[in-house]
Image 1 (tube, rainbow, N blue to C red):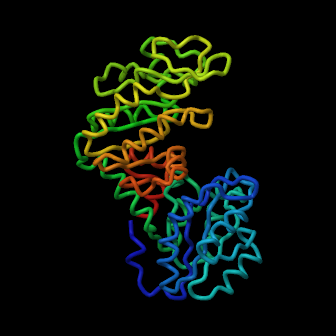
Image 2: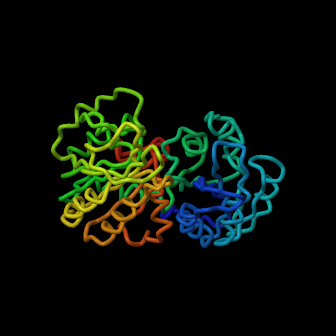
Length: 372
């Protein structure tokens, strides 16, 4: 990837920056501006060099306006919001830009050409600018027009955060430090099995929590009640006997009356719903955390929106207090870190969710390859 650090003489040049401002919005307000703040160094780098910045992003699945995002962005930098993607308002706004100014176009997914990876849509976007910058790591696993087609149409560069993502995430498969602990939560065991198999070879220990744990316990013959499970056979038997896997000894369940109870994994009943790992499991993980030199974590260990976030918070504090190099990813996990105001307690916090997982598995992503 060519870095924006190598850009010279860009005063007056129009730079189309693909950011990921797909942030949670409720009642017209941005609830978490983590991803917006992560894009600011790239935007500020370009504005100080006198470039004219055109920001493009998506929000949701389409149909939503970026107006609340524009309001949140303007707390940090002055940016004009056009309210449309391609049209007379956007064309005029771009034409009127002065050096160092910033314009934000409307939600890319409001045009079907984005998700359909339309060459026509990409060409019209490309006409707006002289240079393209990718600062949208969380969506770089997508085959969208703004991600994989635009960098082929005008000179393309990687943003500062994208560079950090690649550099830091690559550490876990390029001569990682040992002891190396991999903590994996979330759901969809079927999609994460290749990742687990890879890190059972690379890491010294793999701790599995979240809804993934339900599949693992069921495969081992335990009752999991009404707990969330994958709905297909995906070959879990290949890894259940691996001695590197740390299986939690207890869980927090919601029983049929709605009460939260702590139970050993062999005490779960048919009407129970597993929400989180238990206190014994948290304490058992602590020695592994303290001995590790590298900790990679992706995904929450419980269903925190339903009262199962306790373990994730406790273990985040343990990792933050350890001497290990810590690399954390996953949308829900990062949301908790942001809520706890602990981002600076870890070596690196990835902005990605699915993109982080795919990069950890494959070592690259479609939009990153498109920059090459």
